[in-house]
Image 1 (cartoon, rainbow, N blue to C red):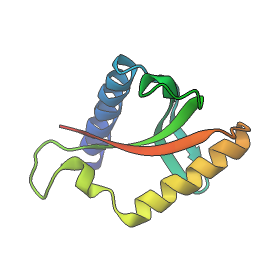
Image 2 (cartoon, one colour):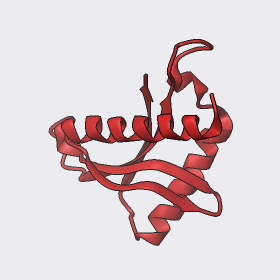
Image 3 (cartoon, rainbow, N blue to C red):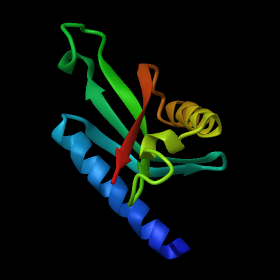
Amino acid sequence: MSKQANKTTGNRGETLAAEYLVKKGYKILQRNYRSKWGEVDIICKISNHKFSNSQMGDIVVFVEVKTKTTNKYGEPWEMVNAWKVEQVKKMGEVWCREYAWEGRVRMDVVGVY
């Protein structure tokens, strides 16, 4: 697949992932957040009370989206390696400083076919 075709497929996957997250009650804060350390596909927020009776407030979620056209060579989420996890962590720290977020954070991976 060409580089442009990969980009088109990836963009479509990110759009589908964002739509899915919104349906699940997440609020999209940003897409394709970039800094000199890399990019986070989606940054969203979910109220913690959606999952339990906890009053611990909102959670900001840094989402890596992996889109594939086939399951050849594994599932989409299996393509997230340790290097990518560390990159998303760094990007999360940068975002939290930039937006003065001091609450809970999490990293999720969304796989799209």
